[in-house]
Image (cartoon, rainbow, N blue to C red; front, side, top):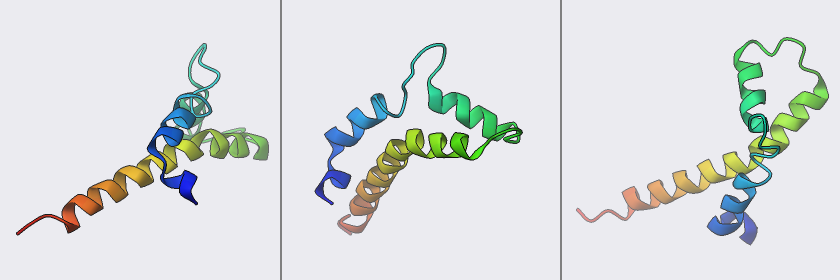
Length: 77
């Protein structure tokens, strides 16, 4: 559970697993464009691939949300 709250580990995961392969475009970007275009022809393996490349980004969004929430809750009045 400690790894899910480690900024450094999640940033490294986003920059590696979240973006590879880098050329001709980041893999996650191609999958997101495919889904935005209606996901026509996507097979279960493509959805699994999207979830694996997207997980680091979701964890990063979670950490940013928790950080923002902590700032709002601990804000002095």
